[in-house]
Length: 324
Image (cartoon, rainbow, N blue to C red; front, side):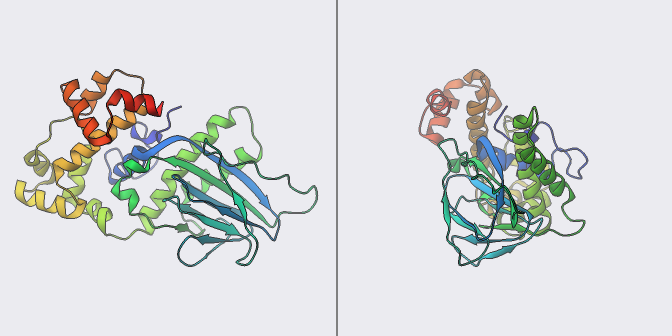
C-alpha cells in the first residue's frame, strides 16, 4: 500500500470539500512529506502513570477514549485532555502524557521502523483509569510544506457534542480494530490512520487556525485559485501571466499578491512543488525516470535530473535507491 495519503486520487466522499478545493491543497501538502507506514496502539493505563515521548522526525497523536490525562509539551503550559479529546503534535518535539503533573515518566522509544513498543500486560483485574489511542506518522522533514510548518506545536481538539463527527467516527473505528483485531485489520488500521490524519487537520482548519501565513493565502480567492491550478496540473508549463489569468488578476498584481502571501514568487513555488512531486513519485512508484520527468513538467530527462539534483543534492536514481 502506498505510504502517501490516499486523497490525491480518491477524495473523501460526502464532504463539502470537492476536488480542487483548498482542502485538497492541504492534503497535497501533507502527502508531500508523509513516508513509511503509520503506527498506532491502544493502551490501558492505571494511575499513577506517565509516558515521555522523545523528539523524533515524525508526528504523533493521542486520543483519550476514557478517563483523563495531561499533555505536557516540550515548551508551553500543560494541556488537560478529557474523554474524547484529540491532540496532534505535528513537529515531532518531545512531550509527555501522564495522569498527573507530578508522576514519574516512563520513556517510550520507537523502534527503527517508527513502531512503538507493545504496551505492558494489563492487570487481570480492575478497570483502567484511562484508555488511550496513541499513533505516529513518519515525515520527511526536508520537504515540509509551509502550510504544515505553520501548525501549532499542539493541536488540541476538545470533544464537543455534534462537533467533528467524521473525526469521531474514524477514532471509534480505529479503537475497535485495535481492541479486537480481525482478519484484514493490519490494512484497515493503516488506512484509518491516514484518514484520521486528514480529519484532524480538517477539524483544525475549520475551527482553530489563524488566518495568517499560508492560511491567509488559501483564504485569498486569487492566490487560492493559482495554488489549485499548480497542484492540479504541475506538469503544465505555467507562466505568471497564465496563473494570473486563473486568479483574475493582472500579471503584476498577481505576482505581488502571491509572493506576499505564499512567501516566494509563483514560479519558484511551482518549481518547488514539481520537485516535491517528483520526490514522492520516486519513493512510491516503480516507473521510469522519463515518466516522472514528464509528470514533473520536464520534456527532457536530462533537464529534470539537473533540476532534481540542484534541489535534493543527489541524482534522481540515487535518491530512489536511498529511499527504497
